[in-house]
Image 1 (spheres, rainbow, N blue to C red):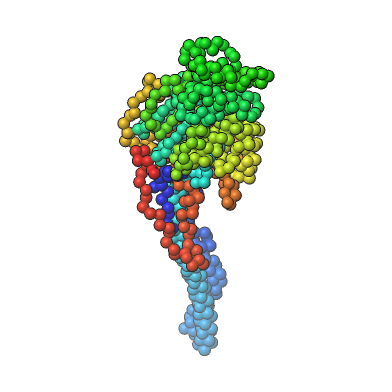
Image 2 (image 1 turned 180 degrees about the vertical axis):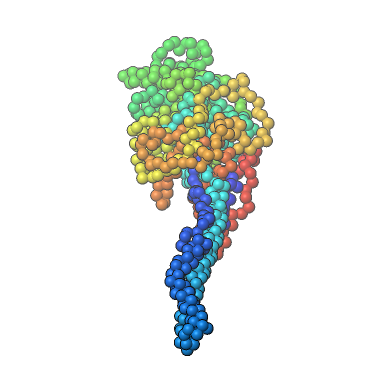
Length: 640
């Protein structure tokens, strides 16, 4: 039977890998077949006659023949007496002759009877010996046949055991080509770190570009940054609000788009969703006065003047406004009752946008990088981080809307970690912009809020569920997946997830004064990079061989989803045949294991021909031509 060679597979630029599925295509053959035991002694009914048995048979025959022998002796003695009497002429010779003839005849008959009995004993002994020999020969043949069958069964078992021991046990889990978004629900910071490291590493290796907006405040992309740096790239990392002066995102937006971005930023403070058109109108008119090169500081100065807050002469003195601009701002909305509404909104706009006043004030030209990370400093205020995160997400949305559609889906991938901190309308606009521009989008949600539930899996999206500690979230997830699915969980996933604490710590800015120079291209490949640059890879060496092939099954039930290992990911999406559900391990170190393939288990099953059946006409058809094995993984040569 022809076998595919999944170990030779390589990363594909158009595939998004979410983890590795544990599966054993060849079942465990169990213990070897027991060798047939050959008895040292045959049973009594089949054993050769023993000397004691023959002796007893002869003794019994002697006892039976004793009267005959005595009678024969008597007849012989009678014949002797008759001869003596005849010689002594004591009786007539005629009478003696007749008596001698009679006694000799009787003695002969007795002798013949004794001989027949002895012969019968010998025959019985011989028959039993022959019967024992035949039985022994039959048993010898049976034992030889059993040993031959055992040898065949053992050879077959050894082949199955070799296939079982050498088989691939980890298969890649990738989303279909028509998927343009991945929604990750639940999870912990270590789990997100593993998943983002895996997605990012495979994207960068394939020659793509990656932007990470980390709203989790947990530095979940640290391993990915180290891995990219080891591969020869020098990632750009902004830590907000410290790096806000060096962030030029949105600097090239037109006034209409800039006003829209700022209006959405202000909406973060609103407890409920409302129409932001009024705020947008105010900002558009202000930007018309300030011009296309207006900065956030100029916008807040104009809003202060419009809201009649502070002394406008200070803004004139600092050069934020000119006298002409100040005069025009004062007449933007006229005078009357409506002034109070404009003043209140302008005051609210200024109070929120002042957190962005340092935006782009120290922007410098930075070298290109395939990995860009924008993160929030967890030492900053929670509300301030929401404002900054909303600004970055909205600015990215407008940049994507102005960009032409990519010819390669997922060539540019955006990951938003902690997307549940963004408003629903901000997420909707980002989803639409990524779908239109063919930009891949990965959204991770810590909890399933009503806003998240409305958007989970909407459109051409795959959903990935990680650990859901909240009981209500676990219930919603189990209903989404379906409780009838039985999934196989590897013991390695449970043991490694509990031993590694990925993520955490803080980012180090690379856009400030301490930005490191790009390092030389490393000679190692992706596997070596994962092993040496990530916490997951460094812990892979402690995994024992015995753990690699043990697993357990569980049903998709709420209490099971609350106890999922850190790196477990339940990937589900709709197909023409129904909903497909797979359990993956997002641990990037699994890629370095010798029994890991980048092909999917269903592709291997379809590529491996079934054993030939006698009734099928095409039973001798050759296995499919898989072509030569691809080249080894190499970080230096992105796969286009």
